Image (cartoon, rainbow, N blue to C red; front, top):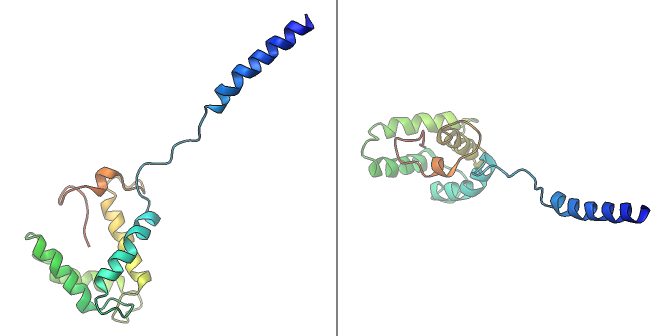
Amino acid sequence: MTRRTLIAAGLMAGLAGPVLAQTTAPAAPAGMTLQQFQAKNGDKLFTRLDTNKDGKISPAEFTAFRKENAEADAKATKAGKRGQKLFSRFDKDKDGSLSRTEADALLAWRFKRMDANADGILSLEELQAKSGKAKVGV
């Protein structure tokens, strides 16, 4: 009887092992967090805007960038004034240029506008949203 009990217990333990091994941790949310968004786009944006490579984005560089975007989107008629307001808003130390930290704040603002459902994650749909469908813009 003891022998049968041990065999049955061994079989049960063998069956329980694989079942327990199949449990997995909860899946990470699909999409991109703010930190991932800044890491992926920060260097690219800063390099693109800092055309004279002095480590800061001047108002002229920012305006030129905004003008390119406005010309690409014929509906953006107020891009010049909006660009000046945006620049002033993110130039926290009021030194007349945007540092990398200030540019990251700009990316955080853009991320928030793109995150249509405000869940802190940019889904594939939010990343691929066409103009007018998501709150996107710089």
